[in-house]
Amino acid sequence: MGSGKSTTAKLLAQRYSGNLLHEESRLHPFISDFYANPKKYAFETEINFLLIHYHQLIKAEEANLFSSDVYADFLFDKDWIFANVTLKDSSYEYKLFLELYSYFKARVRTPDIIVYLRAPTDLIFDRIRKRGRDFERNIEFTYVDTINSAYDKFFEGYKEAKVKVINVEDIDGVSDDELARIVNLVGKS
Image (cartoon, rainbow, N blue to C red; front, side, top):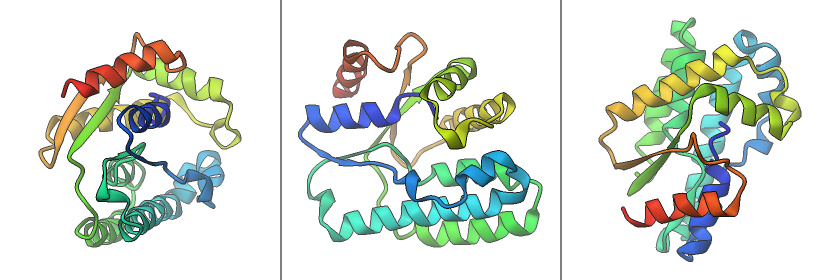
């Protein structure tokens, strides 16, 4: 959220003549409801994101998108990261989510490299506010902070693929020059 993932993935795909796989969050029917009432709509939100991401990856596989490099602005595991935060108060819903997540995870491709754009919560929160998406207007700082911490914790122990952590605190997320620095750092991996 708010770290520059979409712009960075697009620039990487352009720079290295790869395919872009952009998260289709616009397809999500419950995201506005979730931000208005997170406890009530957490399960529907997490299951829908899981299905949207799984469907995108399976369709990309069917379309032979992975025959060349693919740059995505989402990681399938992000669904687990979010659910681990949002479903923690409901053991039944969390367990059901994990069963579905495990089933789908076994069927999707593991990335070769992950670029984790790390930023402090206040910067992420500010960027979310500035982009002005209607469904995010009710997002709370504590939620963003909890998710940000969950990402940090997740990547501390991630071993499935190489992880390149880039601190984007001093990168404005808008300037082509600043984002080109990220592209160059990734290219040195």
